[in-house]
Image: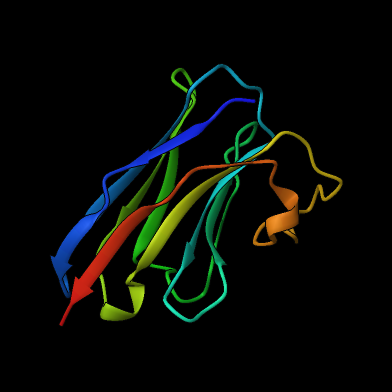
Length: 128
């Protein structure tokens, strides 16, 4: 079983930016990769997803227009560029990988059961 390794978390003031990276420890053929987050006292939620074959992207409404997910196919790395960060974005961010899916329309992109490999998480703290 391989691993996913996140990096790029940290502490910023509201309005600031951070870029998260996620790299697998091995070589995988993935159907999609995604970022999730868990804030204190809340359930883990999907933030953004990207389908590796065609580059389709999906975002949670709360981050649309502020966050951008992208991929480096050659390195199998995904990124999450987070701009105009808000205190509500404070959470542990997790990278996830899906080997396959029965959901070609991407309707379940934000569901944890779609993903087979998870990272350990990286903390993002946004102060007001």
